[in-house]
Image 1 (cartoon, rainbow, N blue to C red):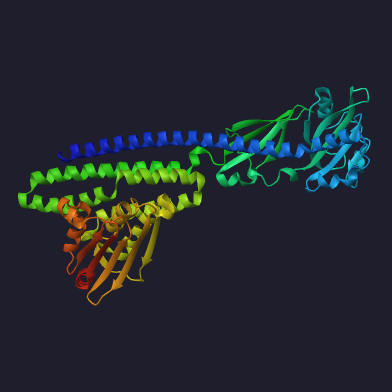
Image 2 (image 1 turned 180 degrees about the vertical axis):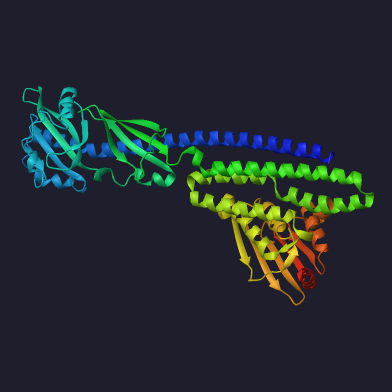
Length: 503
């Protein structure tokens, strides 16, 4: 009992230290994620603002056409109806109008806009402040959104026109204007897709008529109440529109954050388990004979230690978590699937550590292989193709004999190949055995060189196959021609396994 206390203290200390390190790493990753998210929101907001500006600049340029027409006709717009359809071809253009001396006298089309005739832009009313400011500044001003006299909401561009008399002097002719239906004119922009990217957006301005905040446009799912926004101010002629973005989901509800924390906890548990098993092994080495120690080392160190260390690699955790971090923002559904594949892969790996006799199910190992391949396909995209020619069958096999070969095919065959390639997994039933073939069209390797230097992964597979009666591993490969690995599982071993499990 006294000897167990130092081991328990080491286990607790290792668990706490690794967990704290994992949580610190999670915090750093979350801080980096939030910084990248804010940078991305700023980029999106500026893009939406630029899109609004470009659209309104294009539409408000129609007032310049009206101005040019008046200059050409010396202020006569009586025949404008003949060409008005050119400026009115978009359905969201409500009207164009002429206001000599600031009083509306001509509007096209007239139908539906009769109430505008006689409007005095020097009077009080929505949009008239901008009209008077445009005359004073001699510049194009934009007004709105505001309630139109003829009904509905609109955005209008007010442009003062100055003509030259016979003496060559400039005089104020009046105002020309283009009115767009709102919000129809701004439909179909990037704002319609902002929720799909995990954000909410609101476009607003300070209304010059009452000095209050006026919401112009908003995404289908609005800004969360009290959310911290990233704001971009876009100058639109005389006014300033503010584009505000915020995440739809608070940072503490982000699935990736909890997944990272869960992985930190899992790694801490694995570290504690490793310390515990190492401590127990040292105790048994002191208490048992040399023969028992050797037997325990072969069973515990070679099977559990090699299995755990060869399967749970830090780089695989790192790349998978990085991929999850990006997919959670860009492709939530793909991130959800990858998280499921990662959990399935970890569960199989951990179950393999404690499997009785190192024997498992072909079907379960195939599920882990698919999960591992799907994770790599998310990272490699079209560079990795997986082909499964597997009939519906199940039988006992030595654990971790197929998965390492698929991993080698992806990591050492397909990844180094320019353009990627295909990994094929095939199952055939023979009279006395089951035949599993793992082949790839990757870069291949020199078998003689590998035999000289040795391959830990292949040797582990050979060792496990050797303990399964009637089973063997055959490998053929050539540089530039790909690799084929054939696993033969003897059926006599399957019968013995079934007999040992029967009551």
